[in-house]
Length: 302
Image (cartoon, rainbow, N blue to C red; front, side, top):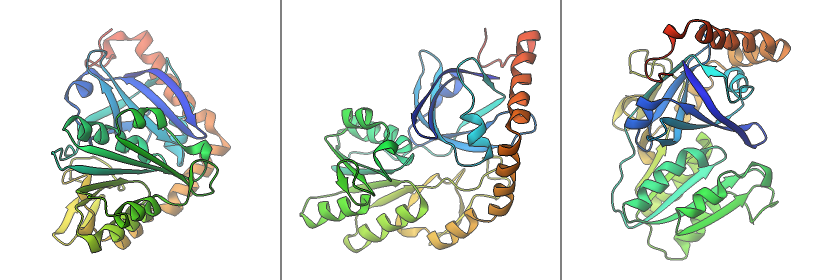
């Protein structure tokens, strides 16, 4: 079991968790993720590691409450426990000295992009970060990303904060200004990543996207996270989560991500009608650990 050490909302339905997981914190690298299960009857969901502190033995996850499990997770707080947290999984980001790197985070994708942006800066790159959100309320990690960026550009769809427009508008402006751009990383909704890929394709700018596909085991065995690329079928959990954006079949990716939309909607509706049932299941895990310390996760000793 993995204790929640800190929990705070960064924006509506977007919550930051600091979780005790020493082994994951020690080995995790930028771009990798974990698979979380909240209780014995819960589903497994992949979440990118936003940060870690090896000395304190903690990892940071930033969660947007969209489906049943993420909404349940966002109801938890410091002192609660998570049953399973497995990782680090996936290939780390390919960190090199490219030159000028543009890191784009759309919505909660900004949290996923943050560790790679920091690693790119540490490698000596000139980092330009573009953070996009629907409105001012949903802009997250502005100070943190600004601190590790040489330039920070913020856009909101409705113009309620900074520049009005989309992240691709800022990217196009940079390209059209004649700036030398050597590498682009885009993380966010699939349509946003697809738009970034089509923006950079004519200019042959190396572009990478991080894909959060439907996933079960995270080891390549279930095949649920298949991604079709120009190099053939690959799996987001073991071949990714980062892929060459110009090789990804985004239309098929979006179609696959909607495979269980009906079941997901029904599960969310049932949860919203009776959330206490799942909250109690999480609480039972916490009480079990308190009454039987021998079941405490070996990775986080008392």
